View 1 (cartoon, rainbow, N blue to C red):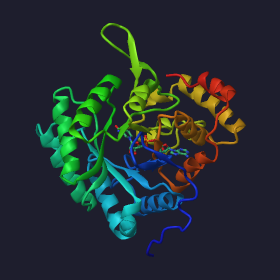
View 2: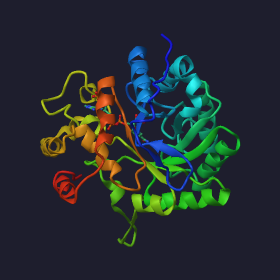
View 3: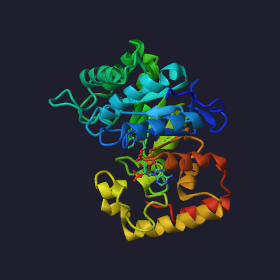
Length: 340
Ligand code: NDP
């Protein structure tokens, strides 16, 4: 059956301005790290993407290595884009990244110009796109001069391969330096993509300098530098949901035993999750919904970048936008459990 997008798709999710740019992103975005590789039925992938777009979630986040196997998430997304979303290309924000291991040899990972531009071309080909909306340096690379990595991002834009560029998992001071370089080049970084959740609050803390004095936090830095922030794994990969309250379900990410390891499911963390689940219930939300609303409470954060293995999860999570406000008392109560 041909896909026709819902007429009312822009009535649910708010759109927030990305830093000082002219671009807006949905408060909730969908990432294709897990659940979109060749290990998952294409029909499930299609159902999730269609429902997302119908709900107003028009930003899909990918990377060269998403799968498994690496590259397959972009390829599957390309298939579904061609079949379902082609008429809606100008309503979509599609991102990709390069930084982690992708192909053998010295040019298949890192932050070199050689790797970044070749990888971006491969990503475009896999997805069947002329350009991505956002291209990221996926991680800082200590073995490449920052000027080289930023120069490659700048070239991605001027050569028409990307409309905007961003960085992921860079620390606060490196982010400020990167933005200084990009401003000089005339292509300011649009956005930073860090991990952030109630169980992972590094972006709020000042960075330690060799002098021992804490400098600005990442969230303070991005705000000062005019960049937006898209927070990845706001559900701590599923831990900040009701998924693990009764043990480890067979079909869960933790059972698969890859990126969500047993250590995260410590009794200490599970006690925090139970405490947070009670606070969510008192707000009339599921824990997933409160976890998403909580990262969005920070004015510096533009969008919460979630994953979903089913349409039901997606619907639950997007429901977060029904209550994004927190009282001071609620925030204080959450702080009792939201520690890392
Ligand atoms: P989340 O923290 O949102 O975890 C998603 C997982 O949580 C799902 O796969 C599912 O687990 C579970 N889940 C989701 N919604 C619900 C719900 N409502 N109720 C119960 N369980 C739920 O994010 P991810 O870790 O998946 O990361 C999201 C995106 O962020 C990625 O796809 C990627 O785009 C980006 N990312 C970027 C990184 C970077 O380095 N820049 C690194 C990591 C992620 P289950 O599968 O067990 O059902």
